[in-house]
Image (cartoon, rainbow over all chains, first blue to last red; front, side, top):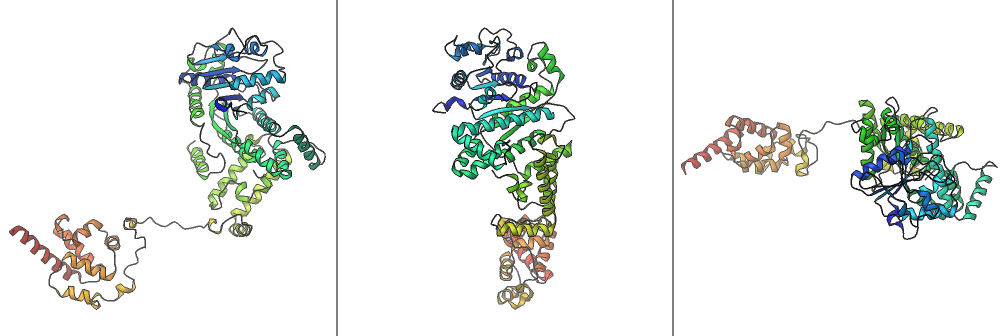
Length: 327
Length: 222
């Protein structure tokens, strides 16, 4: 990135691998909460080809959309922005996309990413689609940030790990030159006796063996990621500690810093609010889930600068003992 | 970032080298929550072989660190490998009671061992300074302080033994008797104080009070 970093810090891709884990709902809610605090916030429906953010935030028929920019109907991305009824909240819809928008070609995608990183908003939230296609992952690499969402179900956890590893692998690819990457893959195949390397962390280790300088640089750039994790749709009977444990695994085995931002309780009224096409936070502001969302927004804002290690800490384990004792 | 197998046992369990057995047990329990066969947190993250390897490593780490002998030997191997400092080892220290009085106030942190110090065993009468003072027929606070200094006993030590606030003892030594609750208190404090210095308690109290009453009379007259 060359000299355009001034806005990149405020771009937060929100993804989670599995469909139905609440990415769109959370993007909408977080955007609303940020806007209420007076922060100029832009939501972009980057779930190309399966956009539905407009439905969650109650802007059913936005005039313009992302595909207007992709197809060059509007000159700048700024022209595709729609206002919402909420002050300070702006929105780029994906509604009414062309049906082939999901298959963005590389040049179009690069143009879009560049345009996004130049947008003058305090926060830009990207609602990403499910899956681990390049389209999704490249949004994570515009800024070194991102919010991952998972539910406590193994299916969802499996997919979020898959997404994190895909981002990791894509970053390795981005940092290394094309041929160096191919050499690295060959080396990995050789070392593991013919079977192709499965995990990006193994690739990094092999690279560090062969070329410590390059490996160190890559490791540094991986440390630059500032990811967050949210555990959504937590039922009362679920293990509340799952989120921090996932963060610890990422820290320990991938060397990625992932901060846990909290649990969000499952609530059937979310379904109700979505069906009525109204904002959950406005209709049910006094529920536990709404409180969890506000707490999540608060941590999202305050947790941004400092980076306390997620990993080993006796204090933390003692706090865990106290927590389990109180339950 | 080191791979899991390259980490030492403390790193595997996310412990510091000075962790107590309690911490070790707890860390192992947490680790099983993360890496156990049915742990949801690491579901699909590891292949079956990787998981088995990690669990075997964790078990070895736990069993080594939790046994006293095993831990000492392991620590020694880490120290020789230069991965750990000698002073970072865990030492089980039995808990000590918290001192009643704050000796930090004067920076004197030596624990009270009075009256078994060499100096105090010698009868006070052997010291020429004390003999001189005791030959007078009244004693001032200043005299008491001289005796105490000669014996090398701090006010804090006395305060801790006789359970009287240091401030009150200072008042006695500075002849500010009006700060004490009553004459009765003064007398008993003086006796205890004298006993600490191995002087005759009745004698000291009588002489001091005589001097103190003389003082107060003088103050009234003027």
